[in-house]
Length: 426
Image (cartoon, rainbow, N blue to C red; front, side):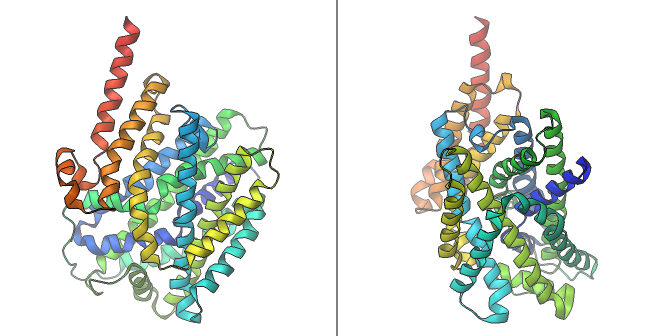
């Protein structure tokens, strides 16, 4: 396989890893609530769900290590804890969510079986694919992803070019911020840190003779391919959600809205096409998450021969247990964890991209510490009564928008670098 073709295969595989049916249900409702402000929420959504993940891929291309390398400048212990938290969240929330979405949208409407049965069959199949790890990305990139893209683009194209009725007004006070925070639910910043490592492992397995720079170029190009695809689909789904927001009940659920849009655009066959899409998109995402988790433990516990097998089995068992729950419940319980881990992910991605002279170990330590401290109020808002945090939120800029960590992080980055420069001049 030539390098150009392989780059596209890895790009499609990356796209499939990011884009799952769990993410597919998010943009339409966001557009539905935004009305004529859909382009503003799209801007915010693109920042957290596309730009930041793309930067994570660039950071991987620069580091060409593992997930562990993202935080090693803070300390090896921190990096290990961060990696473990990242994988724990991935395995217990977005991965099981793919099974729950598959059941609610692709299985229950047609077969009426229990969510437990769906979850068991689903993760048994995931286990089989993950254990055949070397061929997984190739299968996803060559066959499954093009089918997913074709069906989604058909829905978007028909929806965008169909006659638009009068849209209901936006329910968001700050559309850009609402879109940005909603982008957290895609887990794409986390996926960028995780999936970049998966692609590098695959490149190393198939192209050991490639130079560091050649691998860097391939990873960067693959990232652009994946994120361009995500942009088209996320923006398209937000748009049609807005265009059709006058044709559905205002309290409609995420899954019902997506089903309704499929029926509006594809007619009687819409439900069938959507079911195929849901099954494929969810399945590829679950595989990508568990492969990355198993790869990490296999690399960390090099002397333990069954690390990959046992990690995969553990992830699938957890998936069966949580995957039988309602989609809405899984999304709701994810918010506190995302408000806590996302700032750390974004900060580490950016610090690993800036030139070395501005990202010393001291800068890493202080900026990460500040991000950690100032993300606590955002986390606590979803755990305890917001009234108990009113004073703290009132004195932290942007805390009311769940972005209280942003300005302190910028200030700490500048101050620590100035201190380092002054110190070196003496």
